[in-house]
Length: 215
Image (cartoon, rainbow, N blue to C red; front, side, top):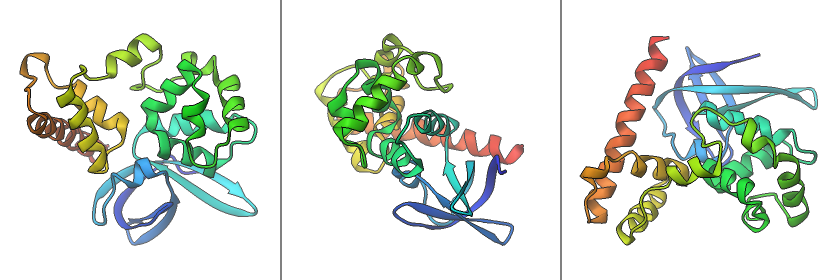
């Protein structure tokens, strides 16, 4: 089994990427959440889930351990396979997935790729308790902390959030970056909010990469 792979992104596609690890290319399935934060030539460390399916070894990769944890949680639901789990994460992002579970929002969950009303209801039922007890490190574990992750509401914040999502960031990443801006530094213009949020994300990525390659 693989715990993680560290190397250079050689290729990205709609449902997978290829990572070059010392001359060996690994074909890894991934969600849109992970793929949207990858470009060819990036030096990355990806968390790996290994599965044997139809006599073939398949790898599933995630840039964050939080995403891998939710992938594993979703797989505990009857009728949810790897592709559906990736579709849910890629469609909703981690924040909206948790929000749907906490609020038992069937309509929100049914918007995810590969999920109909019947499966959405089953996911909500089976994960109703787990969303409060089996939660990854940086994903809010209660409704109260989930609300705390949301940036202060304003039209400028809404515009900045929408712009960051249009740039390819997940809703969870955008909200997290906006929430991390010190309250005393909050500007009134959405353009300044976007600039500060991008700085926060760049700083976090730099720290993560340094930690990954120092291991």
